[in-house]
Length: 118
Length: 115
Image (cartoon, rainbow over all chains, first blue to last red):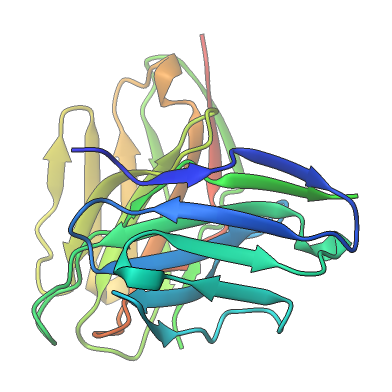
């Protein structure tokens, strides 16, 4: 079974440019999460999809960030326009749906996209 | 709100020594799950263990063991007879939101095994 994949692995852009990150979850996983780690800090939640629906986007820093998951398969995270503080590692994770109210399933992470905004 | 504290920022030990990584958590939920992930130099996050709040049994997997104590809100991770391949950043995480199982992470502990 293929794991979570992310593309690109690295991206270096200039301030004001647009970048789109892609995540392909494990096949059959309805849950898809985006997280971000800014240099030296903890990994922070950005948002959560259940299939194609946004379950929680409370972690999205501002409206320069737009996430989509059309068709409930892969997801994209677009940053437009990018700012210096957007630099960091963006992780995607996926999990199966747990039994409602009874279990929380393990999230499996992709290798991350390292974004550097100059 | 949930919080995870990994007070040890960096630890270095000589190969074959045992090492314990501390994790202390805070949550008001009575049902929750705890996780450990490993981030080797290659950068990916590798799942190590998942434990729910009703299961306080300690777990052993090879050289790895975990000590879960609800009384002290701790979920510590011990590596026995450490090896160079254990060098990595280790993250403890907590999830307590059924329906939106977002993880709350600690800041990580960078473990270096000296050959």
